[in-house]
Length: 367
Image (cartoon, rainbow, N blue to C red; front, side, top):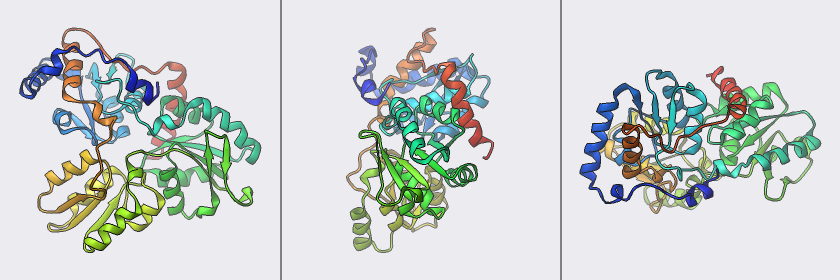
């Protein structure tokens, strides 16, 4: 199910949850958590709203949360506060007895949906015709289970924004070229950091089924899927230039899902975990413009009043699909469990999970 399908999916949440006060909902969430006890585990992604993240049993990035959920053998129900691909990964890594629930099925990821399996399976033989058996596929964990399975079947692995350097370096020990899905910016920034020149990178456009490259294609080392994060692509060079002109003493730190130009002109770039730790360890009085999702930026502002923190883009909005998980849907999912009903369960078919695990395990073996 892609993000458009999710956005259009009928929301069957009862009306009562839409009219309940925040105080009443919070009290009922606490009551259900206490009643279900160890049978319930709530992972919350860093980009979630404060109204939901306050109840998380663990916070982190998508893969980290899926791994923590998999280690929690006591929990029968995993209510994942994130987006669809994250819940899929949790379902792949947890046992068959554990049920993974996404409070709002409309919480998807536009980046993940930019790599459709049909498009990828159409591109693969075309690329092999161009380059022969010299390509290893890698996929960002921000991808669907079906794409992870494709990569697993073809000898490749998943990567996170934290370990992308290590995994791309590993991939080059396996094959001459890599095919990086679905985020071209993370792929480009990582490969460039490892010494691959921009003119050694090509872009595959799935809408035209064409390789975008000028020159001798034998020089190509990295084939980037033409996908991106709609949030991080909204940080631009103009935003960096504005900070340099108006606040020259401010540090600029961005996520590597931002464009290559933005990353090159920033002072620091790294994963969500890296950003959080950098801000936490920064001295009091330091100044930071952060290029990542707004819910996290606002939370960092609240957590570090001793530092001046702003968004690199002052007009940035929180991630639309991440924001689908709100307090009413969260409470609905929990009270349904309390009543013995499972709503919005995420299940990955064994035929997909088996190959997706291969891609995940190749990465985890190098963690």
